[in-house]
Amino acid sequence: MIYESEHPLVKHKLTLLRDHRTEPKKFRELIQELAMLLAYEATRDLRVAPKTVETPLGIAQGHELLDKIGLVPILRAGLGMVAGIWQMMPAAEVWHLGLYRDEKTLQPVSYYNKLPTTPTVQVCLVLDPMLATGGSAVAAVDVLRKWGAARIKFVGILAAPEGVEVLQSAHPDVPIYLAKIDDHLNERGYIVPGLGDAGDRQFGTG
Ligand code: PRP
Ligand code: URA
Image (spheres, rainbow, N blue to C red):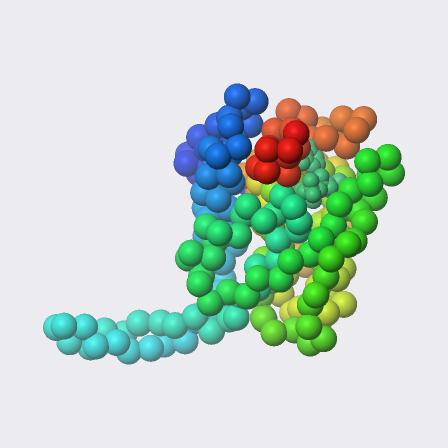
């Protein structure tokens, strides 16, 4: 399943995010806001149990969330997607995965993973703004699958058609939530028109 947002707020914020004049502070705010809007869609099917609550005027039939959620940002760029989502789901666990893309081979290189031996959450949201060749996303989902995670969803911001295809064929059961699928990858594996390097633009390291 691929979800490409048609929401006006997402479209507006994505345009500001792409703009080469957008400074790191604003860029980080936009990443947070887009992550919240996309996580809202990605969590539509979380399970709830009935729960009654006493209001000042009576008893209301309500619900409580049953699923325990893990936010799994791929370092570095995925880090910026955590804060906003975490505000909405303060009980979520955050598990970091360190992966970088080798500049020459474009293959993901793993450098950090401290997952405990058995899964502690039912639903994992893999967070990375950029799905380019798809190598990093596939490697992250591989790790979570090996860990035993039952339900995994990928929440990104921009993707290249090539990356969507690679992630879908490696993990057809992982739904992909995006603001937009762009045109193509260039010869250096960058999404075009894209937004440049999402890690550098957030952390001011470009
Ligand atoms: C970027 C991005 C993804 C990866 C996507 O990270 O945040 O993790 O590239 O590319 P792929 O789909 O071709 O694997 P990068 O390797 O630049 O690391 P950084 O976030 O630490 O800068
Ligand atoms: N990583 C980025 O940050 N941007 C791209 O366009 C591709 C990979």
